[in-house]
Amino acid sequence: MTQARAPRADAVRNRRKILAAAGEQITQHGPEVGMDEIAAAAGVAVGTLYRHFLTKTDLVAAVVAEYVARVADDAEAVLARVADGARAADELTAFLGRVIEKSVTDRAVKAAARTLGAEPGDRADEDRAGAALAALIRAGQADGDIHPDVTVGDIYLLLSTAPTDQPPAARARWLALVAPGLTARARPAGSCRPSAPGLPRA
Image (tube, rainbow, N blue to C red; front, side, top):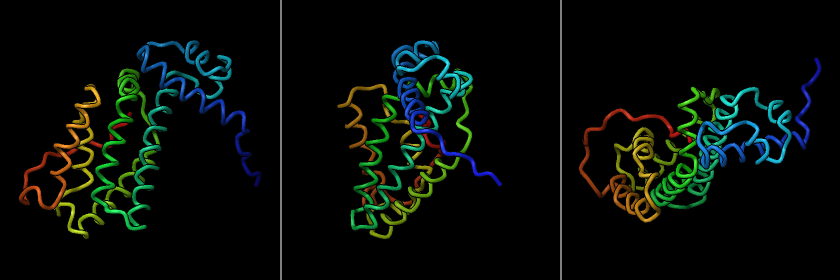
């Protein structure tokens, strides 16, 4: 059986440049930005762009998927630091702050994905993020730092309500206000929670 060849290094570089340029161009100009403009910003020929992504919907879906992969990588890195002795509650708060800041720059891509009906497809990275967060929460609960009723769904709910359209000071204040709600000493058990959405996708 013939083994599939790995992508060439230049193809991998071009794909990364295209994804980065697409995120920047959509953020600056909205979902209507043309593929020609994205190719120019990436420094590649339009034909090269289309060899990687047949449609803008495919391209936006890939940008969203890359965002989710970065969040999953971060969540797993956080879990590794906790395994090495870091406090889970502190790491969780810092993780929330980083994801909020990522979401600020990717807000336009998220809107473009909804406009174009882009679906990220493979849920493996979202599952990775969820598994890492669940383990992180359990570690914080075992330490007695995170409230026993906190779930991954709660984390996603917080992220979905973050003021990503507000200036940095407002985002920092939001995090300072909501983070204590995760701790074991901040509130009584049994608070009513609505069902939470999934991981913010951009």
